[in-house]
Structure formats: structure tokens, C-alpha cells
Image (cartoon, rainbow, N blue to C red; front, top):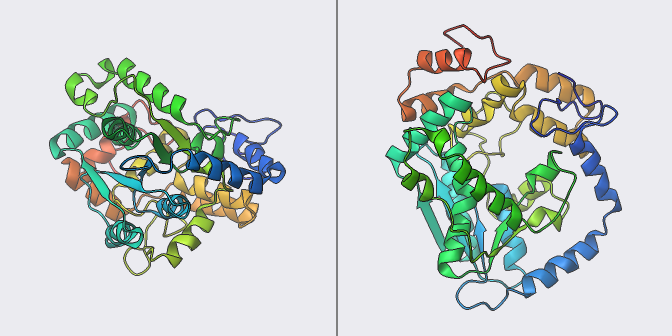
Length: 352
């Protein structure tokens, strides 16, 4: 494993593109200095004005209630559009802060909200299968987060779907930063069709198709991060002014270096941690390396935090994951240690 000499991100990230010891995310971030952000803001004004005044809803925004959701909604609403908010929920236990943040977002901006809940039995079968076979536990849910908003936009005749971050560009697996994400959603739909056999008997073709939009009648999909210099800390500061709550006083998480990223669903942290046995890094590397790029954290400190905290798994998240999916913790560790996708975390053991 080789680490970026500028941010310490490892080259094991899928799609990672290193050049002269520097990761793609660092090279992409440097592009920001040459961007005319005032021009990008005018581009955003012009783009959204094309959809303003659509009968019913002008656009649809996928939200979790997190700090990025607050930023996206505020940018759209202050330009006079009327969005429909959509949230995809899972069966894990949700934090008090997360519940508050979603409710506050809806009421603060006085918007209508559609909550799509994957039925519990399907969630259990899909999540157990994906965890055991690939280590990507929330594979089905991650698809749904992108495809259900698209599907609902098709059904309701809403011409625009808004997402926040172009993660492929921000984390360096693609050198292309663009606002039009339609082709990315189309590619995801095609990939879902190709993966039917992968799901074996865990979920049926009909259940997979239940979250798959039809191929045709495509609304436009856009990334907000193209138009503004995307920063989780900046978004957090904006969200706090609008009533967003972090986890302070509720949950002192293990295996992370902040208390405001991905805080809605407790066991979601396990989905993030599972990158560690697969790729040798997890969310701590993601966050710390990003802070280094933004000049908010020194390289040596980031390296120290990553080496100390990346291997750690949160016991609260672990309990929720196992209780919800019907594993004992011993069964969880047996799966992790003996899985073919585990390359970095002590194979052959039966405990954490």
C-alpha cells in the first residue's frame, strides 16, 4: 500500500489514480484555485432558472437531513424554487440528532417531504447477502439512494433531481468535474441490471426492479458540488445556523475524528468501517485527507489520526448492526475474518 505524499490517502481506494506520488483527489482539489466561482454561481442561477415555475415541483432533492442536505436545500430555495424532498430510510436505529435534523430541515424551509422506507424483510436479506458476499453491506440501500429519487421524479413529472457531491471527482477516482450526473445514474441502472445473478436467491428480480427506474423519460440530474467549492466543514457551519445538531452529548463515536458526518443511522458506521478489511482504510482516512487538502489539518497529524483510528470499530454501531441483521458479534467477526474480500484485517480469527 502506497500513501499520497500530500494527504496520506492510500492507493487502495477503488479507481485511485496516483501520479508522481500524489493522489487524484489532491490533484483535483488544486483545480479549484483556477475556477471562477462567481461565474459558476451565475451558471447555477441560469441552470435552476430553466426549471423554476414547473407545474407542481420545480425539482426533487435527495436529503438525509445531514449538513450537506441543508446546504443543497438552502441554495435551491434561496433561488426561488419549490423542491420536493425525498429520503431513503433503512432499518437501523437512528440517532436523536439525525431525527431532529431531518424534521428541522423540512419545517425550516416549509417543504413537502417524501420518505421511502425499504421494507424490513427485503432490507435484512439484501444487507446480509451484500455484507457476506462483498463486504459492501448497504449496497442495495446505496443504489436506492440514487435510483429512488430518480424514479419518483419520473413518476411525478419533475424535470430535475439535485444531489450534493460528485464523490468520484472529490475523492479522486475521476478527473472530470461536471454538473450533469444523468449519465452516472443511467450507468448505475445498467449496472443493477447486469448484477441480477449476483444477488442469487437473496432477493428476487422483482425486488431489485422495485428500486430501478425505467430506461426512458429521463429527468436531468445535477451535482451541486460543481457550482460551489464543496466543503463539509463549510456546509456544517451553514447547517448549524439553520438548527442542525451534531452528536455532542449523545454519542462519542469510536473510529472517527468528528461528530457531524454521517450521523443519521447508527449502524451505517459499520458499512463505512468495512472498507478497512477490504482496502486498508475507512472513513477516518477519507475525512483526515480531505482536511489536509483544505488546509485545516497538518499532514503529520492526519497520518497520526489515521494510523490510530482507522482500524477501530464503534461498539454502538456494531451492536445495532448485529441486532438488526440477526448476527451475534462472534458471527460478525467470523464472517469478516474469513471472507475472501478481507485483505487487511487478521484473517482466520473468530473475534474482533
